[in-house]
Amino acid sequence: MNTLTDRYLAATLRSVPTQRRDEIANELRASIDDMIEGRTDGGQDATTAEREVLTELGNPDVLAARYADRRLQLIGPTYYLLWLRLLKLLLSFIPALVGTVVTVVEAAEGKGFGAIGPGLVAAMQVAVQITFWLTVTFAIIERTQTAVDVPEWTVDQLPDAPVRRGIPLADTIASVIMLVLTIAYLPFQHYHSWVRGTDGENIPILDPALWSFWLPALIVVLALSVIFEVVKYRIDRWTWALFGMKALLNLAFSVPLAWLALSDRLLNPALGERLSWVAEADNRNSLGLAIAVGAAAIVVWDLVDTARKTRQQTTA
Image: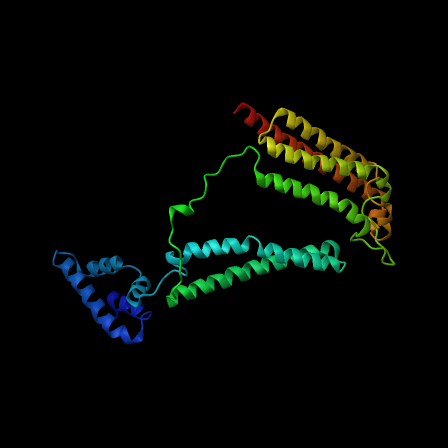
């Protein structure tokens, strides 16, 4: 007869070592019978008692794992924190490093912006490989009970309490890096553009005539912005004077950029030789309008956000 107890025993025994199945079956059946008998002696119906006993024992797979002394987690609490710490450390720089190297190599081969894709793919693949193999390694250590000298935690490992800064260092570093990369790209695109002529010569993205005044002027504004970021970090809080300086720098860069874009003086006219859609006046006008609107939107959003921070920090 295929009773609930028989089904429960079968579900439990299928996951335990073969050599122990008879022993566990006898022990578990005796325990179930005793528990059912204890309930029926109190006047409970046998069928109801059997169902409640099996429900109380729980999932047969979990019970089988306890009999087999088998872990139900990939990495247990002994090694989990060490695994997590190593994973964060490795993922913090290796994928980015590999992705950067691949992008540089692809760009050196003349793929231009097309080099970004392979770099991102390589970074993601490396991140997946690191996660997989590190997890496999710790899972093997967990199951083979290999002795690993995990240092005991002490109070000396407590980090210093973070000091709240009005201007976070990470924000300053990110801003300076973006500004420096923008400054570097302006002359770089003049000599190493992703657009090539019919005979392989470099075609700058920006109009070379702008080097007579506008591009050097924009570079000066960007350099002043770098100095501003450093000064802002040293002051460590927003003030209305700093807000005014930021507004002037933003306008000094975005207004000429928008004017050049709207007047069709920003992009190199020679781009039309290789990019047919750039040769059409309507397309150039639409692109110029998009650049101007984008620059204005970024400036407005940045100034609104900066004004909010300034008001919070000056009234605190």
